Length: 347
Image 1 (cartoon, rainbow, N blue to C red):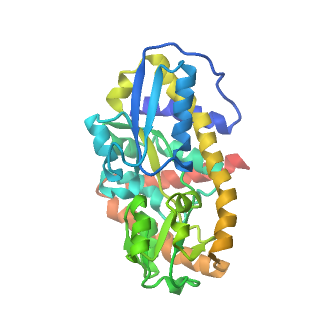
Image 2 (cartoon, rainbow, N blue to C red):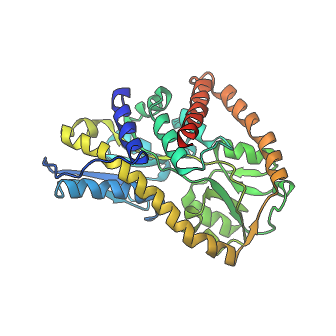
Image 3 (cartoon, helix red, strand yellow):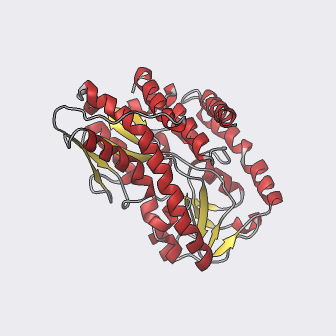
């Protein structure tokens, strides 16, 4: 994806946050049928691209269709970028920490304690970062162009067995956590696993995993972890990740101009519907979790200690580990600057 293309997408998506929108008009064009590869079932995470697909179909009278293929029907979750490169499908979701080597710059989003918990701030920052040359270069090698962030919420943990009611309680716990979040948990003495979300239930059920970190609350419920867990954390907020939708560059290039414009215009509503889906499912899930499971809450003193030992030290290590692969310091600095910019705009 070129920087020329990335900028209009960012502007269009940001328009939604600023209260402006595009008047829906019927668009004529050829019949185009795209397939989107994803994993798991229909859920809050998929709501954004479902919204985009509906808008495209509605505004073209059904001529521009994106068919969602759930449950790894087209590709394994770790192989979606490979499928995009081969042209096996036109759109796909991917999660950065499923394969760090495939998208090293995108791993910056897994660093712990980034201030991305606010929906407006998180959306603006993610859209801006998808324009960064290092992000674009990561996707170029897969013949992919970044299209839409999955806006993953802050992670929390859900587990079975003895609850880690203090930071010391994590020592020896076998946890599913990837990227920088995994590094943070390792500092607490946890034993790491990076299995895909689709394998977390089996891992916990068989006793090979004690606790699972996932976007809170939708993912824990989507993968039914609450049915085999006995505790959950509710204020740890250790960080998040990025699972984005990307488009095959050749498929995009073959579109007529009016359909390219439609893809841009569909983003604002797609992001709005994505956020709304997360907010609404929290209203259902959180009371259910509290009624069935032990809620683990940490004191502010403990959280401050966690941030001190597992925050900036992990950021600094990430920069050193990646400095020869790309300008890691610039990627981190840009991310932090975009966070501060979005916070100021929100005031």
